[in-house]
Image 1 (tube, rainbow, N blue to C red):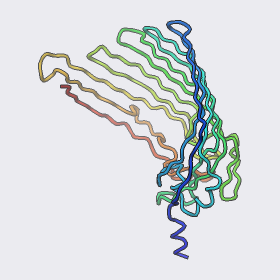
Image 2 (spheres, rainbow, N blue to C red):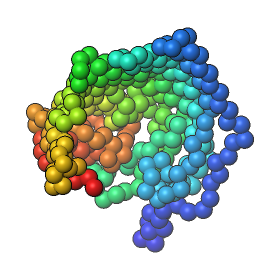
Image 3 (cartoon, rainbow, N blue to C red):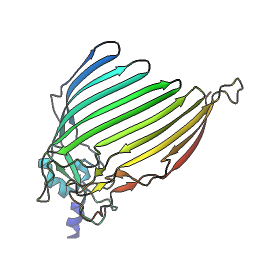
Image 4 (cartoon, one colour):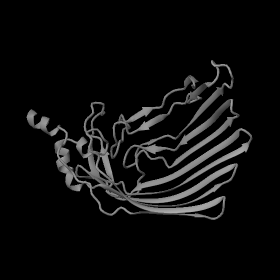
Length: 296
């Protein structure tokens, strides 16, 4: 019994093929005038299998027994993506708005075993999760509103959902229409910057919407907004000691907010009804860095 158990826990070995002879890409860009342009593109892509023994979606990160049970259903991930967008720029403003639609096929999903925790590094199980549909928009705006001052704002909305139900270990989980794990629907950045050649700095906020770490979406992580501050000074002097010298202070997580930074550090599960999967990592507390640089 021990010998059989040891063999089944060995990592899988051998070969698996990723191949496709037709991966077209086409794009177009049209300038309406010196300030405005529109663009569009289409691409068909394939992701080769990860051949490492540590990759989250690698067939060789599974045990020999798990690989034998899954190999016939594993296929290289394919994607069909289309996007269309608009850009504007002049001497003070740069702006863009892009919409996209992506269809994935044979999405590879890594499932963490149902142990109390996965600190021991138990290999995950890789399954073919079927299709995923992603649609969304990306918007960016940079405005130099006054001498030495600028404002940058970006926003992204992404709705990524599973197209099929997930079957694992003979159990069917109702994942069709559920949100993709670790994928927030809303992301935003706002930053105000100043730079007069000597004094420079920026103050910014990063927002991340709620995320799920289970394929059936029975557990969610709250959204977070993190503020950062950076200030620096560049010396301009004929003195050798000061010439090319600059100093700066960087403060991350300025308001010392407690939040979840990483989702999926120990993989994902179809469900986690007790909220006990140890797969989340806390964000760093407020940190202050002081840097001095000398350019020669």
